[in-house]
Length: 111
Image (cartoon, rainbow, N blue to C red; front, side):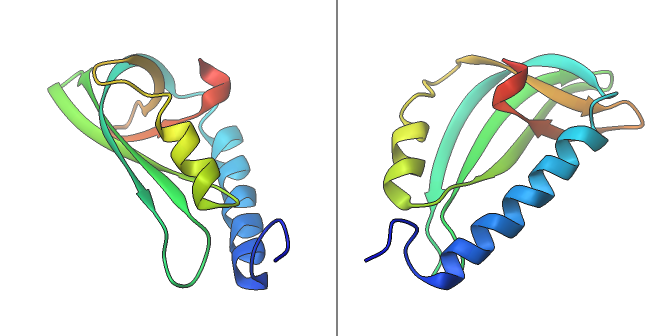
């Protein structure tokens, strides 16, 4: 079996990664704040690539808020390994849309 798995996994990983890079630059002017990790789930769909769904809570201008982000991976073992690096209530930096405090993004490069 190839390193990236089936062709649909490789293609979806590439597409989701490109979209994520676009979001990284699009959100570069957003405010950064500290969030606390509340949980995570590794998603492994029948079609497409595995993703880590990272849940967190943070304080917005409108009070306490909850959010989540999806991080694509090449394989389920990579996603599980990365997920294990997040402990409960671990502080992480997220980006918050100043015009919509419920819209957030998590990027490892911000840490």
